Amino acid sequence: MLKKHFWASTLAGVLALITGSTTCAVAQEKQFTRQDTLRGSITPERAWWDLTYYHLNIRVNPADSTIKGMNTIHYSVLQPAQVMQIDLQQPMNIEKVTQNGKNLTYKREGNVYYVQLTEKQQKGTANKVEVYYSGKPVVSTNPPWSGGITWKKDGQGKPFIANSNQGDGASMWWPCKDHMYDEPDSMQISVRVPENLMDVSNGRLRKVEQHNDNTKTYHWVVTNPINNYGVNLSIADYAHFSETYKGEKGMLDCNYYVLKENLDKAKAQFKDVKRMLQAFEHWFGPYPFYEDGYKLVEVPYLGMEHQSAVTYGNAYQNGYRGRDLSGTGWGLKFDFIIIHESGHEWFANNITYKDIADMWIHESFTNYSESLYLDYHYGKKAASEYVIGTRNNIRNDIPIIGTYNVNSSGSGDMYPKGANMLHTLRQIVNDDAKWRAILRGLNKEFYHQTVTTQQIENYLSQQIGRNLKPVFDQYLRDVRIPKLEYQQEGKKLKYRWTNTVAGFDMPVKVLVNGKELWLEPTNDWKQQKGIKKNATIEVVPDFYVETAVGTTAAR
Image (cartoon, rainbow, N blue to C red):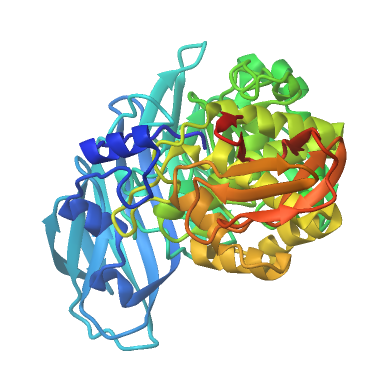
């Protein structure tokens, strides 16, 4: 998802950014509340139970913009405890909670409900609770960047409804364990709507149930683990068409749901799906959810990476709303939303952050997937030009990694800067077959898992065969661009890294009179002999660094 980020700046942070002397510790600060901690941390009332299955069974009423229903939460007991945290944000309300037919008591603290369990919770046992709720959920004021439900009309005046709630939380519209570290192993989503409408949710459609009050319930089944924000509600008078894709794990069902007025445009524009699957299965490995299929669903906002039900609202045009974010022309070779949001099936839905502070794991890799899509279909030069072009969008305002345990993501630079960090790592590997194996290996090693930054960093360091901690510290935890300072003295080239974290030792490739030369700079001066006098020296532009000759800095 392309998400806007907002921060509160401190004077110290502003001054540090102006002087260029900052490290991540002082760049920006935000004041957090107890609600942030309850939302963003693994509280004791969450830690003792392991989520195994949801059955979300709701009725959506477009006439008054309300949702009413229940969520059955299945769990296993990791440690004995009697109080369970369930999250549901205001103005939604829990009406009752039951276990084994008995009503349970609970108390509310803001967006958190503490449910008192009466039956003894014994380690290793499997239990469930039923949570009944209702209300008028928050309306998104700027979807998908502000969370909530979008209630619109299609061109025929019929309801056109969808959710978008990454970061803000799935608990904006349904009660759940609203923390990314724990996912259900599978899920059923049952949505009752007026009979002239259709609900499209995640997974496969098991059945459609007709009721005698002019409504229908669509029952969708997800057989894979799924994160909370990926749970999808898309309601409209949809037209449906489908195809199959012969992929690495067999035949993949691809289903498309669009407004009837856009059917012809969709049949043409959605040809990018097969091209996306070709490229991403090549680079990342098999599509992670063959059992649940792939869907592309039109919604009244730009788009989101809802698992196996990617949402689309890019007006059937290439680029990002018709624009090329790289300024190179290559961004108009594909529909940005189809490529970017589908890339999240590998990096967000297959490999998922435990804490939104590590959101770069989703967005840096997926932003880079746009370049790899171009690489597969148009060649390495096109891919390189595209990702380098996106550097114009980098702000270097605050670190990419956010604050842990308070539901706080870092800089929006996680998109273009994160992608350029990965592109730089590709240069360090200097072996595209190995780089591809590393990306595929990530999706195999962490298949259907929630992960931390440390796990990803360690894996990349191990597979590349180099301690990359200083590199990650520089690009993810600092706002400065590494600067290769060099000067030529006769036939000697002196060089070092400046404007970096301590111990930064990233190798870099330079061109000396057009001839490639690898350097291993550190923060101390080194020298390379045998350089022709007055040589022309350039850093290969695929490295996201700056250069400085003597005291004169140049990009």
